[in-house]
Amino acid sequence: MSETIAGVDIPDTELVREATSLVRRAADDTLFNHSRRVFLWGSLKAAARGLEVDPELAYVGGLFHDLGLTTEYASKDQRFELDGADAASRFLLDHGRAEQDARDVWLAIALHTTPEIPLRLAPQVAVVTLGVETDVLGLDLDEISEQQRAEVVAAHPRPDFKNRILRAFYQGMANRPDTTFGTMNDDVLAHFDPSFERKDFVDIIRNNGWPE
Image (cartoon, rainbow, N blue to C red):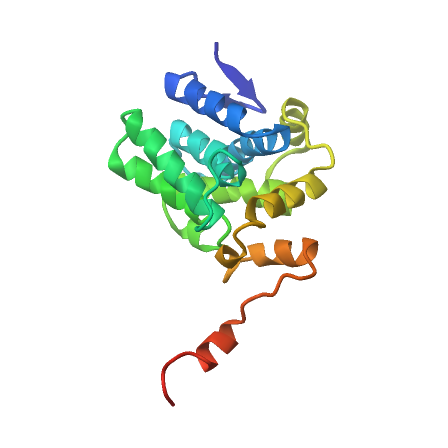
């Protein structure tokens, strides 16, 4: 049975149902509801900006984008974004989607914490960043009506979301701090762990093995 939230149709396909089931099993309520909202906000903003987005790809991108923060899918030696991107690519290929489709969703997830660049790429890439920036950073909320906001949040509530998502970020990255170098993710580790020492880009350049 099809589902519509704030005018956005959730694709009624086997691929979408299996994606929902997979993420629902792996993620807690905070990450699951956040991921569904990312799809919904991204779809609303894409429509407002005149972007044509494949709804299945947008859905998998939104649902899988934080999968690398979960115990089941987190690795120990790469950025959490890559964990989710790799899982989404495998999932799409296993479900018969084209290599380019899988690549677009891989890029969408891998780059979703990298400002600006995803918005210059394919709509399937941009839609995830649009959703993430809306739900986590509150950017460009004026593109979504108060009624749409109310309907999305009614379907997928966000109780104490700001604190809970920061805690989820920390818990998902605390055991691999080196993977946060060069990203905004090191802000999260520094906030929760006073002993965390950031790598300094300037120091790395000045102290590397090349002779002067």
